[in-house]
Image 1 (spheres, rainbow, N blue to C red):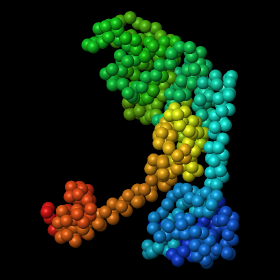
Image 2 (tube, helix red, strand yellow):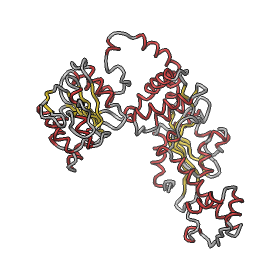
Image 3 (cartoon, rainbow, N blue to C red):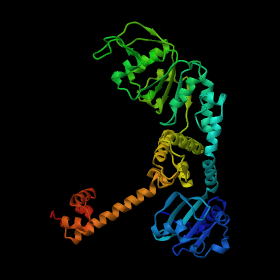
Image 4 (cartoon, rainbow, N blue to C red):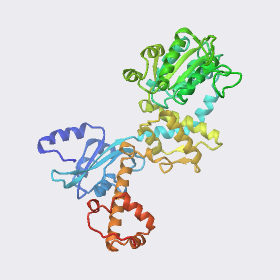
Length: 470
C-alpha cells in the first residue's frame, strides 16, 4: 500500500523532488496542490508559490488532468502517453496515495518530458520519402554489401555486424545465438554472401521443424530403396545440396540426440553416408548454426553433446534483442512501412506520435519478426493514411506490464457482472429465466456465467439464493 513519508523523511522527499528530472505533482483529496517540484515549475511555466495551496483545475483543463482521473478512479496508470497541454508530450506514472489506515489522502504523478522524441519522430515521418529516394539512388559498395539490408545504427547491432564481417571471410564454424525473431538467419545469409562460398548454395534446415524419424534422411539423403515409399532414384540430403557452400542449422538445440553424434562425425571428417548407402561421400561445407536456447544448460541436463557444442561454437555471435536496441525502432518501422506499402500498393502510412512512443516502450518479446508483423497488419488495415492508437493491437497499449490497465478494467468488468447477476437472481427469487430476461441475455449465457463465476456455490455466492431452473 502506498504511504506518505513520515516527518523524519520530509527532508529526503524535498531533496528527491528537486533533483529528479521528472515533473512531480501531488494533490490531496480536495484537488489542492500540495507538491509541485522545480521540474514541474520549469516545464509548465508555473512557479511553486503560485500553484501550491490552490486547486489544480485553476491551471489545467479538468479533462487534461490524469492525476485527477487517478484520484477519482483510484486506479494507477503507468508509462501512459499523455498530452496535458497543446504541444506538450509526456510519459506519465500516477497513483493514488493512502495513509497507514488505508484511507485515501491524495494522488501523485510523475511526468517525463518526451516532447523532443515526438518532434524527432514527426521529422522522421516527414522525411521518410526523401530518405527512401536517396537510398534507391545509392550505388556501388553500399548496395553490394550483404549487410546493407540489416538495419539499425545502435551500438549493439553495429558490434554484431562488425563481428560477422570479421569472420565471414573464413571457413570457421559459427554459432549464432539470440532470442527468437532477432534475425539469426538474416545474419547467416549475409555471412554466406560475404564469404568465398557466395557462388555456392546456402541451404537452411530447421532442426526443430522436422520429425526426429525423418531428420536423418533430410540431412544425409537416402539411396534407392532405402525404405518404403522412398524415391526410386534416391534423394540428396541438405548436406549434399550445400556442398561447396554453407549449411545453416537453425534451432540446432532441437537436433535429435542420436543425430548429434552423426553430425559431429561429419564436422570432424567431412564425410557422410546416405541412409541405406555404403559409399562414403566427401563434402566441403561450412556450418553456421543458430539457437535461441542455452546450450550450456542443455549440456548440464544431458540433452546436448558437449563435444558437438565446442565444434559448433568456434565463433560465437550473439545478436541483441530488439528491446536492447530500441533506438533502432523508428528506422525499422519506416523500413517496414515502405516495404509493405509497396507490396500492397498503398500510400506509406504516417504513425501518430503516441503510436511510435508505444513501440519504443514495448518490450517486443518476438523481436524484429513481431515488429514486422505488426507493421504489416497496420499497413493492410490503414484506410486513412494515419495510424493511431486505436489501430494498434491491445498488447501495445502503453500500460505497465503490457496491459496492466486493461487487466484492471477487465477484472472490474467481471466484478460488476457478477454483482449484476447476483442482484438479478435475488430480485427474481432465483428464477433463471426471469433473471436472464432482466439482464438482457439468453438463458444459456446466464448458465455459462453462473458456472464461470461459481455463483451456485454458497461459499462464493455470498448469499443463499434459492436458484430455480424455471
